Amino acid sequence: MDDNLLKILEIGVLSTSVLMILIGLYAVLTKRSLIKIVIGLSIIDGGIHLLLITLGYLKRGTAPIFSPGYEHAADKMVDPVPQALVLTAIVIGFAVTAVALSLIIRLYRHHHTLEIDEIKTLKW
Amino acid sequence: MVGTPVLLIAIPLLAAFVIPLVGMIWKELVRIIPGLVLAYMMVLSVTLLHYVSVHGTIVETIAGWSPPWGINLVFSPLTGLLASIMTILGFLVWMYSYRFKRNVDFEPAKKYFIFLMMLVASAVGMVITGDIFNMFVFIEIMGISAYTLTAFYTGRNSAEAAFKYLMMGGLASSLLLIAIAIIYSQLGTLNMADIASKISTMNPGYKITALVFFITAIGIEAEMFPLNGWAPDAYSEAPGPVGAAFAGITVKAGIYVIIRIVFTLFDVPGAYDFLLVIGLITLIVAETTALRQERLKRMLAYSSIGQMGLVVVAFGIGTVEGAYAALFLMLNHAIIKPLLFFSGSYLVFNSKEKRICEVNGLGKYMPFTSVLFALGAFAIVGLPPFAGFWSKLSVLTAAANEGLLLIISLILIVSVIEIVYYFRVVNRIFFLKYDKSTSVVPHRPRFNAVITMVTLAILILVIGFYPDAVTGLLHNASQDLMNTPEYIQNVLHGGQSLIR
Image (cartoon, rainbow over all chains, first blue to last red; front, side, top):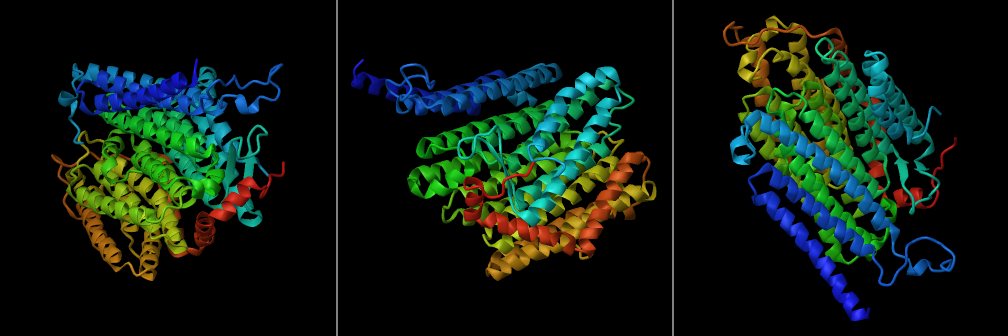
């Protein structure tokens, strides 16, 4: 692939991640269904993970492993830290989503609805 | 040495996973093991704090990766003081809730103790870690255990309160991750000391953006004004000891993260003024809202938010004196507010609605709990013989030395509001007549709860009569906070390495 195409790809991925964050934020702020709010939170998380991965990505880079033939290739390696961060963040996002869904089950049993407007008995 | 700082995180996390297993052997172990672990953590953190105040900051590297590459733990006079406050309070919360659901059911108690251990471990971890992403992980662990503890009672609106908290917390973690991504993309490091030493080379636009993301995210955890909608619900719907743990442990960790980021990580001029303004708004809004509350725990929750606003105001003064006053306030709040939560939840124990008007005349039937509640109320508004007086006085002197007269007058006006709503409750308890149809049925506190409340009351009186017992520690901690070059020096260039 030539450099221009890679550049366009990189910008495309970056703007996708920002777009995902904005879509998720829109869902969290405007949707009235609890499930959709949780989906919105997950979309925000996905966008941020994409953003983090793109930050550490190197054009024509290799995997950050010192293997035969790549002993002196440290400057050509993809930064492994963002990948480790994203891995951790995915696990955390999974746990938060699981807790959120179990809370939604509890709320549904209590109120028999998922509409956020009908659940608000506590003042904000 | 009894151990190293990493044990403060590793042992409670291990205990959290071991609790369900040992519960299969003997059910009582589920209650005993958290107590042993918290007692050990308390001894360890206090011993280390003493060691640190004599020999200087301990920097522990994890898994042999020296900073700035690996994760490191920093146990300095400041972080050690906060970790000690948290572990002591964790132990007291355990003592208060030892018989939690004992005769009812085994399952809830097991979950309660697991999440209590995770809460204490993550709060201590947030305070002593030196790595910004590690801090994010601990914030998330704290969040998950706090949501779960909030949703503990199935009978109340607790799931709704917890969901609200989760939504805010989820957004906070996303913003935090964006801020970390900005910092990493610009500076290529996650170590806090390394960031602090390189931050001046960063583009101001990126710097301000990251700071805004950080403050918004942590403002949710630390109950700053427009972001604290979750707090009153979470406090009032969670079980009593959990409210005390929130007020004493999680909020303190949130405040610590704010000050670490503003004071050490970013040197943005104007950030102090921003803290001052946001703290004042939080203080005024929370205290006036507390005045209108009808339920006891919501009132205590709003009072807690107000106190945190005052802490942020004191930090916003920006001098060593201000930091000293703020730390003193945090210490006092950590011992007074749990006493109010413990005694308050016994006062309204048998009531379904937990309204303030239901405590009329309880002073005659529950004299012991009522006196302790009154003592807590007097202490938190800052009456002279109690602990709260010295902290409020030091905030006012710190503000006066900087010539911030408007702030002094606002703090005093808000104090009057505080006195009004606390004394209204105390007045109802002692001077109104007990009425069988409206007042709650008195409930005798259990033995372990009595010991916990008396311990807290003794602490309040000791600090009130001999403030010198803690001022040395607080002075060390405040100087440690303001001395960023020394923090960087300690972490990146050796400092005090740990003798094993």
